[in-house]
Image (cartoon, rainbow, N blue to C red; front, side, top):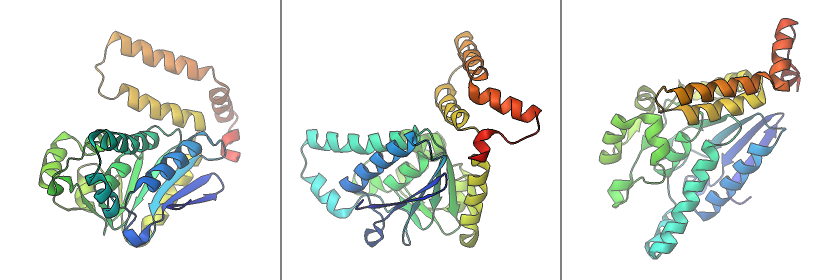
Length: 260
């Protein structure tokens, strides 16, 4: 791959944005390679957890300047097709069957924030910095908005979408965009602890729990929702994975997926 580095260690896959010379900025190749990589890892039975990181001093600085120059000359149709590629990438990360952890250090701007917001658990070092800078350029954070608004909430989005001000990792943690705030020296240790915890859990149950969150979030508590959730748990209870989980608990032993 030209823009990424993929490292597999046991059941952990580490995806590194590897364009440090341009602060890991997005271009067509990075978007394509990230989309393909996450689609493949989502279906890879040997992978249980994915960690997304950036090489160099920056997690992701947003859009590559050369790519932006090209976009300025695009027709509406070309811009629409180009934007759909980024939208498809973010959806691929968001709907990945495996837990996706973001490791944020240094600047995380614009599209980089969309990428982080599409992940399941976000770790940030205290020196990380965030910015939704689009309006400064006469743009809007459109394709990333479904994920960023979910992650930080509408009220925070009202401020940071409109001001384009930079904000700290501590502020990002306060508004819910960041789950775990760490000193730079403890960032990897904190991630490793959660990775180990996730590996103990049942793979299919993790995937179905992610799907459950997406489907139930924002819904009213209604008869149809109650029936849907009851159907889901009834189906899962009958699965070989759940039977193994319950049996292993009763027998006071580790389940088979924990041993793999």
